[in-house]
Image 1 (cartoon, rainbow, N blue to C red):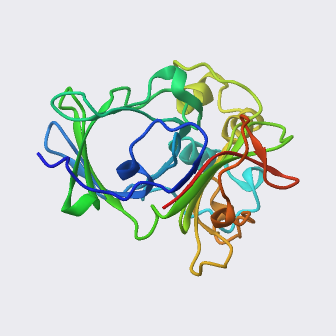
Image 2: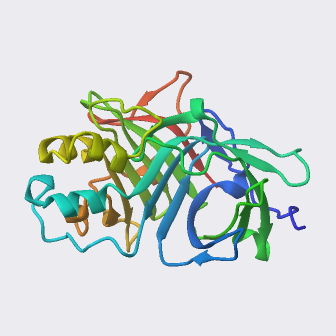
Image 3: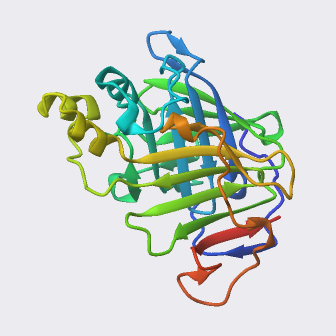
Amino acid sequence: MTNDTVVEEPRLTYGSVTVPTRLLGCWYRRYIRFADGSEDASTRVIWVQTLSGVGDIRVSATRPDLRTRDGLEDCSTEELLALAEQDCFCGVTLFDSKAKPFPTASWPKESYLFRFQPVITFPEPGWMEWLEGGTCMIERAPSGAYVEDWRLQPVSQRFGAHLVRRDAPSLTCLYVAGDHAIFARNRLESLPPDRTLPELARESRYDPKRLRELLDCEFSYARRAKPIGDYVIELSTLPWREGQPLDCPPVETLAPCAAGSEEILDDFWAVKSCWRL
């Protein structure tokens, strides 16, 4: 096993730190392989990891193309049910570098901020192994249920931040790693953690109004082509958001802030954590 990857330590940091430097950045999942030998390489899965906070978005390749819709109100019941199959979360990643047989990342229930899908799909911690100079990260379920292959996106470890929207109606976070970002906005109500969105939809007898309430939660992945450009949404749980600018503040200009749990960035965002290599 290869876990001796050397990664430059951040020279500027602010906020709580719960993960090692080599876990920072934006990771694309190449595939997940299950215990029965089946493999999924088509679902788009993107993980943006900051010093503590994490944003994760998972969208099936079979989701219908709804980019021309005007919003949830413009979707049919069948289309709303297709959106209910998506799975995303944000919260805090915990890490035990001394765990055996591999360093271990974990996401206990209390570490989640909120989820698109109320039920935790993969409740196990992950055994982590870095290969190929740290650009490949293999995650294994201790039970053997799955293996995931993650690939680090170029220059996404150089700087990043976890921001929280100020005075938003519901908790809204922005996770940035270099030219990559995940925007996460919670729905207005808390959902029971023991039922999936399709199950909650069935309980409501597929009432369109109720379906729209259940789905009014956004996770969007955005990327920018130029260092001074805006982040543009490439993948979203609300497909009509794809192609729109994220209107993200200039995160790379952040420096360590004075003591305090939050530092005001501008009229809209507060800094929870930031780093720069």
